Length: 259
Ligand code: COA
Image 1 (cartoon, rainbow, N blue to C red):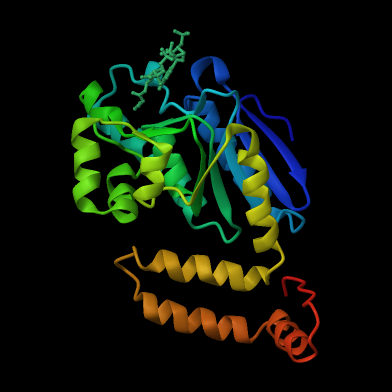
Image 2: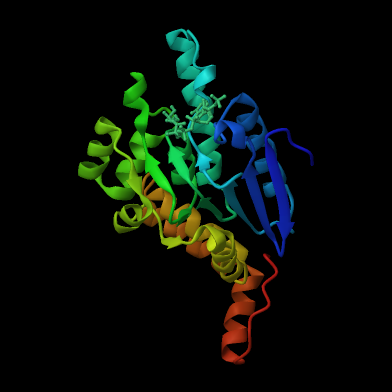
């Protein structure tokens, strides 16, 4: 598929989505949101796509935020609709049954930090910078940032970052648990692909069950332990469970089919 603001590649079951507006530091405009939704449809529809990397074009930015030039004089209702569109898109990423990893290759500010936080986990290059600078604009995060930052790094530090607009570098992001690994810029994608290759070798429905149950921790309408029981039961009913256990007993590598 051809996109105006995204580049995509598919290699060994890993779809890499590159937000491609480097001249605007990959800021998220209306078209990026439309196209992210389209590419998510494609990801979910195609069995050959097993997992996804989201990254930014160029060496400077992952995503420097929502496109501020689209923040004209919105009414309160229009501003709320804008936030809802962002939240809905990022909820689709968070709830994707296929793993989605953010490979953060530079600035991840505002909506960019929120996009990275909606992914299942994050890997950063050593030049990455994270932050929610919305208070500099008289705003607050609108794409889930106030919620996911608290979830990922705890309330005290999240409060400080939200209120001060202070940016943190990659080592501090790792120390806070916001990113899992820090790499050189040159090895960022390779490292991300290595981890996804490992995950892609596991039973896809079991991986999806892990995502669903772990996400339930943060969903007040769900009892996470009940979701875990349900997903455990679902996993038990799969062919891959039979294959996994048989392969273990036969001392061979399992050959999972996603069924
Ligand atoms: N929305 C729209 N355009 C953006 C943008 C955003 N969030 N972030 C950067 N850009 C654009 C700049 O306007 C500039 O465009 P121009 O060349 O047409 O003037 C281009 O990207 C390059 O950015 P520039 O500011 O010149 O780069 P820099 O190296 O001096 O600064 C940042 C980098 C990230 C510190 C700075 O761009 C910035 O503060 N961006 C906004 C971050 C933000 O507040 N995000 C939250 C939005 S809710």
